[in-house]
Image 1 (cartoon, helix red, strand yellow):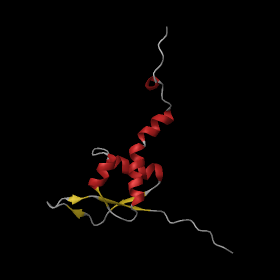
Image 2 (spheres, one colour):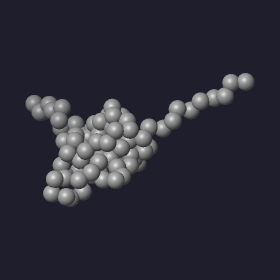
Image 3 (spheres, helix red, strand yellow):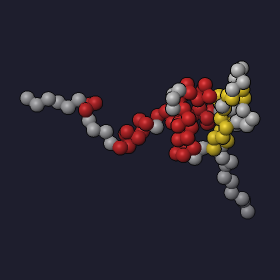
Image 4 (cartoon, one colour):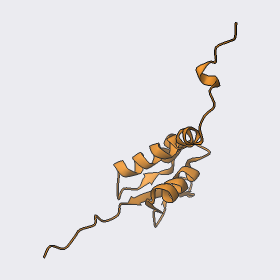
Length: 100
């Protein structure tokens, strides 16, 4: 009798692996899209994208989704005086066609 393959033993396609990797990036993109033109604090970004990977997730949103995410200027400050990074998502203006 041959053993039956288990579902988790199945080889994953590159698309499935890529989709699983993009999950945190998708969540980060959803966070920025839910609050356009509002500064999002680093602690919120870390809660969504992971403490050690939130900056990479923001970079991935810029690269893969073409999102315009910029650091807030001037920067806010923590109580001890250190810079408190925040990022702002600027959505693209809708394309409109001139009517004749």
